[in-house]
Image (tube, rainbow, N blue to C red; front, side, top):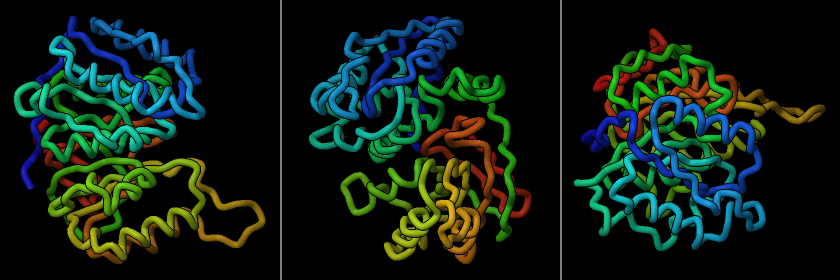
Length: 303
């Protein structure tokens, strides 16, 4: 599978638009602090007035959230889209959604940056041939360590990314196309029109607030679906707040991951620094990487 089109590098002065395609905004201090981080780098940041809309647990109704995305994507002056937060809701706006025709995905690509629930949009964009960024949203960027913030800017501004170090489970080295995302959101894209072609892919998964038995259930679905037979490797980030319930017999989440993924005969690297806790190292969606299951490294090859 070929690597995806990488949008042109961002530069100070570029216009970036904020959208809230998922959950209702709640973390206002960190949200505005993160906007200031982008502005301090010289970027123009446009925040829509409806950013504080609420419709139940969503940041506005589906049509309004879909319109936010469409307006940002079709704006010829906009070079990147910053997602406010995750939560839930981006899969809902994929109904009746098309990245084309008004903004050609091959002629006018732009950066889309987010993680967690934004996985649905990242993978949808991947399916039409555009690379994006699995990285901090605007409610989390201000809490990232300096090196993680700098990594995000290095990625979108076209500079080299340092390899990430985790714990290798063996099975050698694989090179493939990186497809990072939240395990829960990605699992719910299986058997939908937004399921990617997994041939030649290196999956990168993280998750939050999922009990070990639910992680087990999702990974078992991946096994039974046959999709894991197509991939070349698996990179695992943080599985935050995924401890078993108190006083209930259970495996740990690490034991579940080992049980469900350790026998696939492909390189697996765990404990990489991306996800919901401590640090969320930016990862390119749809670019070539090398995963070393012996040394425990993830290297972005074309950065």
